[in-house]
Image (tube, rainbow, N blue to C red; front, side, top):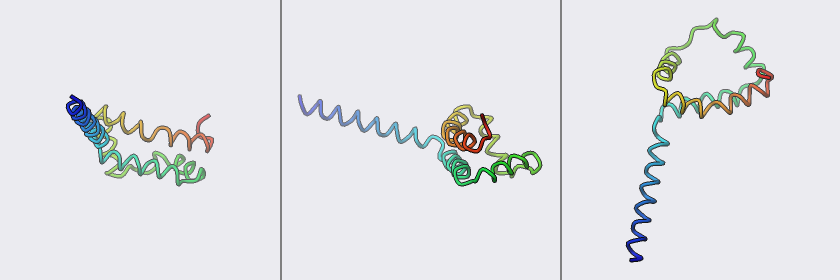
Length: 101
């Protein structure tokens, strides 16, 4: 009896770990992009962010940025995952720089 319970527990744990790994890898490219975006904000100075904000709209987006934006616009789940990863670090940096009240 104990062996059956232990085996069932082991199988359940393995399934839970597998599901967690699959969920973590739902959007591997998105994870890389999100990491780069967060890194950009964390490494930038406030002055750099203010200058970039002033230039917004004056320089065209790169083809890679356009493709990423289209992917986020067309896939709500991907958009939610991306925003969940980048929102807090970006908002924190913008707050530190006085870009949001």
